[in-house]
Image (cartoon, rainbow, N blue to C red; front, side, top):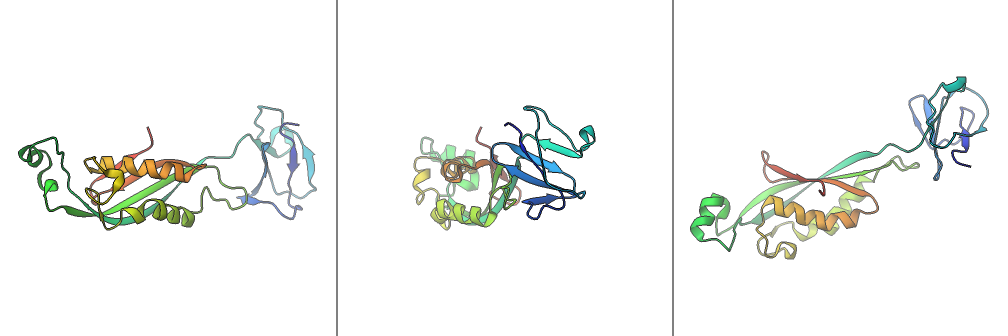
Length: 204
């Protein structure tokens, strides 16, 4: 029945995780049971549908949470790339006026920093939203291996026909990474072009 679970007390041998003086156990699709560590045996308990109980309700010391908290974790990665900020629909004079030295016909480069943020519920076994080592490998494989030490203006197919500003670069990054990270949620990308300038995007 909805909300059915166990009150897990100190005598229980294998709680999935602990938070402070309480233990959390996840019952697939049935929410989470939160309880204190006072001594005693595991006994069945029921939370009425749609109701949130808190420790101490009715003197039981038992709390039910209807869902796990959603957290955001971020991995920071670096790469190097070149570009020329240039709109071919405009004259050379207009490009120079708009983009200045960023319009140098011989290109220029940046030491980029990319921050990748993923949002979700902590796994009940590992406590991770996503393993950050796995996230690093995924971003390198799906994206950075294809842009690192490349020229966005000529070497990156995903930027073909697009003026490679940081704004357009981060939109291309999102199109690559968002489906690769599913079923987790890519919640934000932040791209630092210099130590003073960055652009970010959250999919909206």
